[in-house]
Image (cartoon, rainbow, N blue to C red):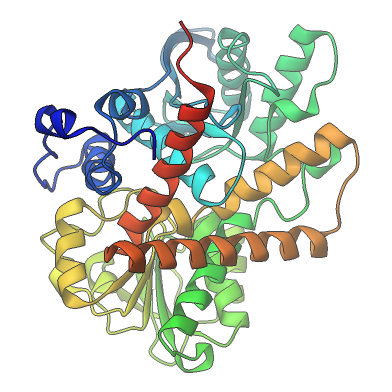
Length: 435
């Protein structure tokens, strides 16, 4: 391939970063990228291009609180890459949002889109705040000011936001309205994950969890496992974890444990996932106080003797400290970056099949792409059509990643990175470097 290194360039090529077990998500991404870059013999210039974010926007977001005070928040938007198309990525509201975290999430979105064949680049955004301590009106004002500050960044052909941690369809509706007011026209395609009434796609809310289910079933088939004979534990019972648990239960899997920030809930005979979803809806989104299960810790959940473990919470949940305790045959990463590079080595030695985040949770961006297409066409699909196309895309992506891992004799994670980086690097070579 034309972007491969010469013999001389290989001698000056940056050595891969040492394997660490830190809470720096960008470093975790770089370590996996380095391994894939070595396999692809990536040109040093292309390496620097693909590892470096294209744009990093940091903006002050003043908000008038309900009591009349003005409070300042920090807003971030990172566009990692635009080679395959307009950038795409969620907006998260959380107290621990950082530039390094957002940079990592934006890079993962680049490889994620490439792996599933979506013609987008990667982006991510966030505001460092605690939305749970804010009123709905304060969150609305925060959202609108953040959007207004980035009005020249966002656009249906430029950068397309979506929901992420602590953001939802209503917040995307405020993004849509703010952008449209500035543009003097309704621009539905500027954001995805919005309400169906405003041009959102049916099936978008469930898409990430559905994608997790699809690749998990694909992995089971590869390993000769039966869904109706398999047990599952799910860490995180938000949108991704609850949907994945519910759909796998419908496929015959026995969901024996789930957890949220209040702790883990275990029943060896199987949990009633639908009842737990209804409980959280009636209990401010929390499982606290749920009495139809044994209470366990999150650490105990990760170490359960189950067939499938789905970490669907946050980054760096499986580390070198607890990876040796994992007994699951399959890990399907519903969250972004839940496994550290050092933990990967341990899991690989144990023979655990890890379906990496840039494949496992790509259902969300896939249906976001479907939503964008529908908005651009002004023609909307049925739920059955959305789900069929999503299932097909995820199964094809899983097969492609599995074949890449076998071709290079590497883990599924490195196979996915090789596949994604190869696509973006090839597209970059075709486009060339302007200037």
